[in-house]
Length: 587
Ligand code: TSB
Ligand code: ZN
Image (tube, rainbow, N blue to C red):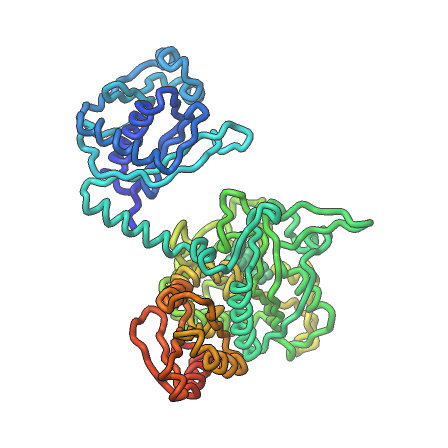
């Protein structure tokens, strides 16, 4: 998808189109006042004070029509330059413009305005020569937006639009937008009853519905199995810790703005935990360790709470309450390379199972200037970063470097993916930490009998179950593989009167074998039930009628296919069990 902001020609065009929209709005709402109208990645928007009126669905076509009219009229777009005092005089009745002008630099005496016909706006430009060039545009959506983004200020009306130089490009873009909206996990999550949110629970605190809980449980079982095989030991720890715990770890000094505020209970001060490392450090230190015990791999599906800005929270992808697929690996310095490699292999193995192909490795380094975010110890950072580079260069993966993306305790290898809507996100992470083991005074006895400090690798393969589920819903458009999806088989009797009995028998056979099966015995038309099964993206829909009942067979359709296949019911059962065991998409 093209970035309008980065294409110089489209950038100017969209900027002029924002003015065109403002002019049309002014024609339709003579009291309208305008705040700012910038070009963004996807087009443009304008924030407008409509003097108490609120934009509705019907208004966009009306505004578009007016824009077309003005464009046809074809007025020239003319630039004037005026002084700050002239500008203040010219816009004296418009508090928004006065605010903008009065914040302009004193020395920058020349202020530019652009006029087209009866409309003039304060603007730096540049613009097109004439509104005539604006032909292929579309107003896309609207929302409320607080003036200057501050909830204490007045709510303005924000209208979004986009403009192209050809009809074809506009149509391509609109098609792509529709595709993205279709893929957005928030829409899929709603349509397939996977998660919900409620103001009474709070922002960024999604509730996983029964369907979502099945997906999550399946993900947990999947990764737990893999981790067991790799020698991980899972634990359960509380999702709070005392402030002192996070002072010891350094989170209190370097991660506080991402944490919920502390709370007092009797004589203790608690915080909701943003990470699980401190708890796992204490579990490690509960026993004495010899070099022979290492690596020790402590895993947990652990709930964390983080403060995320309210504008940044998004469905399951960016939440304030999340569950990490977390583990901390305690290793000797000599084991770093081998253990790190195993984690990267596990990441690649999981991505292969889920068919994730489009991802980037990012080596996240500290910003040495940022003394607040990062623990201040140059030697430690140099050692950790050069070790991590050495490890990465020893295997065959491509990565790019990003300064200022490290954790406060050490550098990371993050895996980035691109969601349907919005910027790239990090899924998996593998991090090298020389700091926390020191702060918790962890030790092991080496082969010479000396006390040594272990190194910790923090890693999360899915990242969080929340974010991974969001991503996988977008990747698959909600058509999850058999083993993962909430309902694997949906049974529809052709006629309840004659076939329900047989349908119940098949239902029992399948559910006795732990297949997630539903029986649609509603008195609705067959075609209606089949369509619904497809809308719900159920991988297998069974249609049971006379022939099936007579022959002890089932006829089934795979999601997305119109083809019907008939097999003996026992064969169907075996095929489903096999596909599940192999974790393949469908039978
Ligand atoms: C891996 N201490 C380490 C842990 O041991 C840690 O917390 N790392 S993290 O900060 O990078 O978070 C781990 C993963 O959680 C990230 O890679 C990302 O996939 C996921 N994550 C981070 N913030 C959010 C959020 N607000 N919503 C959903 N998932 C998130
Ligand atoms: Zn950690």
